[in-house]
Image (tube, rainbow, N blue to C red; front, side):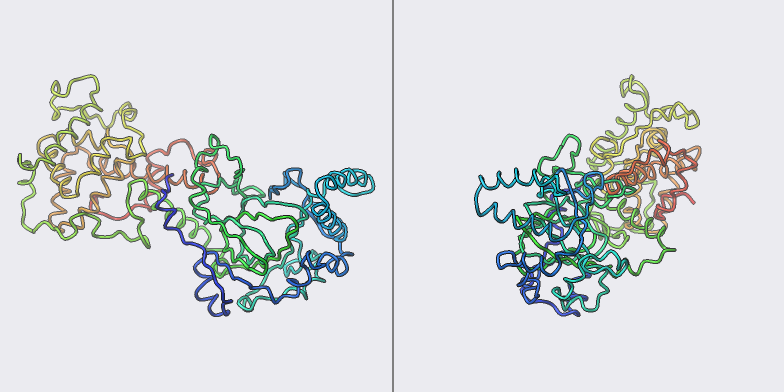
Length: 546
């Protein structure tokens, strides 16, 4: 897992609009981008904007209009932070007028000063015996329905609907719910995302946002949990020992301070944390995105596999310091020599002997032979055993212990050496090994090549395929595989290593994005036969023996 700072810098940034877009502009130019947008002054024409303002008698207005309604509030002992996990709070019912009373008391406390504030606390404690709550600041009105098309009986403040206007750019949308959010004291929502598009219309406050790609740094709750859309992090005092990736979370965050009358479009999947000053009132609209509305149930497993494959490919490219592939296509000119092709008719066996002038290839060959020898015969000097006589017992199960289980390029000197070579230079090195050190080449593939090494080598083969003709490609692989007594075992070694590398990344991505451990689902290591089930992930290439 390594998203770099440059990756964070390339993420889409929040957009600001002084002019309210039309429905057509929103649908075609804003919503499809899935990037947050602020619409300044979007709700200044609402009756709610003028009538609910606490500084202009708005609390009296709300008490008179909706005070008799019973609302469900969030009661949290961890206030001023209100966590979405149901274990950290309870839902309580109270008259809306009671909550308005708390808001009025808090306003008076702020006006009268600290001494009056402490007296108010004492007074509140006394009133708790008559059904009042001991600490009103632990009460937060979160997601109180003004409109809910799926469950009309849950609507608690329908009487406020006429004060809230539909923004013109949402007129074509099927709004699933409109909700009131209100606090009587300073508060903060836990970091979370919503499974719907969200338009947050707020009087005042600040919002911090993270894109969906920042999910691994925010340590979401397990995907199977009741609060799977919430982060487990305490962003004020993060525990970097328990959550080391959280150190990079700020690189992905974007903060916006909203003013009275502003509206913020928060696309589905974007994590956000709302900081509210004392007595903040907000209304939000939720609706399903076109993408989610268009998903077919019978396609779910396909979508899941495609997304996992996309995440695996992206992570592999990042681990190997490659730019991300676009639309699952491999660029045919990944080499630094994009226009270099080997002319037809060149006899590959003539290339099997490296000339002293090929200093880079000669040096690489010497290093590679030495690394293989050290790995296979670690207790013997390099010159004591001819590399051509390295013992390779592919059928001996004890040799499986020798094969390194490395997945990080920088930890594997063999893979790193292979990666530094240009495809055509590596081709020369492998041909020289096949001609001069066949047993060393056999040991490299069957005993020494790690999962990341197999990934690197097969990628080099794919790059090589783009630089040579069909006849030369066929000859090269005939020479390469001709070294092995069991050519199928050689191909299996490459496939198994490559698939092991992809499997490890798959496990990591599922853990990072869903906080799910594969240990309860997969065995600690796939057997060779089992790993062939993953072969659908492998691109067709000449290196795979037909």
